Length: 207
Image (cartoon, rainbow, N blue to C red; front, top):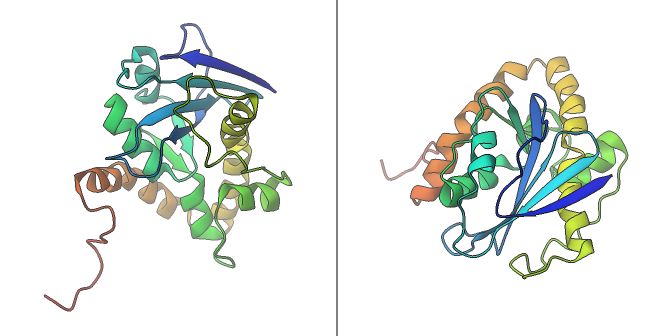
């Protein structure tokens, strides 16, 4: 596996194919407070490209064009967070989208464990380390351990999608998953607009 770290944007000339795995790292999980620090991408060929951002420098025209390319599916795990922070800091609308966490929740109804670590262990027999999850992603220099952790979050998403697609087809939930993926940009927009903790579809007694 190969990991390449870039500063501020991707270089020209990388071949991505028709689907890329995407993930982000931030200073925390609050899109209003915690800035975007890193975007990870992989075409599923054992290589990962990491784009590191300095504070208040979020131009990245090549990365933005890639994420908005309608001919390339963007595979996320927990896309809701990632597409919201990408919208907030890079002003991109990621479409089309595939989310392995949503797919898992639609077909792995025999468990309440839908994290990336659990999916990798069960579906593709890979044991991920999450040791660097809470490290300082805003540091000037990312450690080799941080880079490996970030790359691992995208290395396996293509393989997970393949396994989950088989399960979705078996359970006749492929169309339902597609509709959920298509709704994700609206869900992210609701999060950014202030409805992060509110389910506007839930029944309320104060009608």
